Image (cartoon, rainbow, N blue to C red; front, side, top):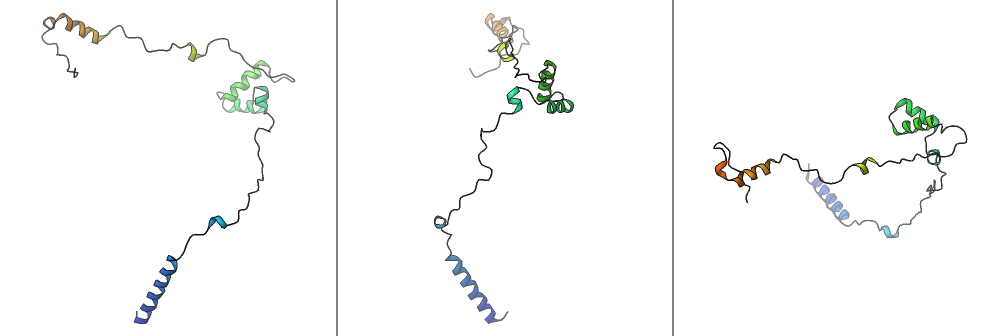
Length: 147
């Protein structure tokens, strides 16, 4: 490269650096604010109650399809119970099942596990209380637990 080209590139680079150093971010406080239009609107709780909520059972067709695809699914089992109770006959009200026995978590005993009868530590303590002279010769000494 010749000398005038180098000078020109240096001047352009210096001017470019000077201009970029003078730049500042835009002032967001003075920009106009356009409100967003709510196209769908609030749905909320104004929707009508679903079939499953009103009658406490799935719809007949969806429950039957669910029973055909996966019989062990919750919807399929609910459909099967409702079908055998005759809940899908016309003009039947909502049916609710009441259980008159305790829940499994209420019937289970709560508390710590019982202490086992065969307590090897207690057996060792009883041997030591009788005296170390009563122990056999090949009996290992008790471990030092830092007491």
